[in-house]
Length: 242
Ligand code: ADP
Ligand code: MG
Image (cartoon, rainbow, N blue to C red; front, side, top):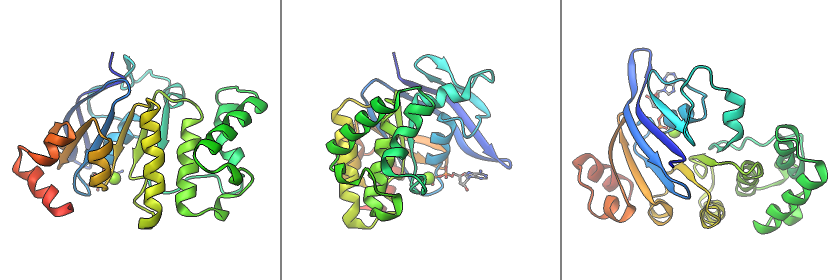
């Protein structure tokens, strides 16, 4: 079964169509990337999946459950998603360890000792063992974003949504964040991500989707989409970013 199924999703803002009949399937362990110019609807699509936006038409299913059913339990859905955005959204008044263990403890009812053991394991795995007691403002942007990704992983989500997680970083810090996403893929995590890092996108994605003005114009394996794009708009976009 698909982890995520998006069928005929439309979204309008003030009479302007921002998503125009999007269809997309994400299978277990797949990494699906959304690329396209600024304003093409990538973030809005992710926001529809995590229920920050309601869709105007169409349906979204997570593990077969219809998220677009108005009776859906939003909190329960979000518990199955790991979400990381461009802006570092760590809690500034909490240590790294507390940031990571908050949701497992408070939302998922994991005991403190167990949550902390797991958090220390994740921090060690991603080279941040020495930072568990640090506060966010004592970390570099790249370290903060790695902690945000670890925090999202700590609840063992069914699906991770990553929206431009490297866009706010200096180039030398981008590499370390891309490294952690690569590790996530190797661990079998299912992900939908948006990125401007085309080399990384090509390297990590199983499927790349090109959005243009709210239309999913073309999708395919990266070799195909980057080397032999079918649509002139895709070719034009790729020329503009590389
Ligand atoms: P992308 O992530 O691809 O840059 P977005 O999904 O952020 O694109 O935006 C797609 C379009 O929707 C843009 O024209 C943007 O201005 C518009 N949009 C996004 N969110 C809102 C909102 N809350 N209200 C009005 N317009 C919005
Ligand atoms: Mg965006």
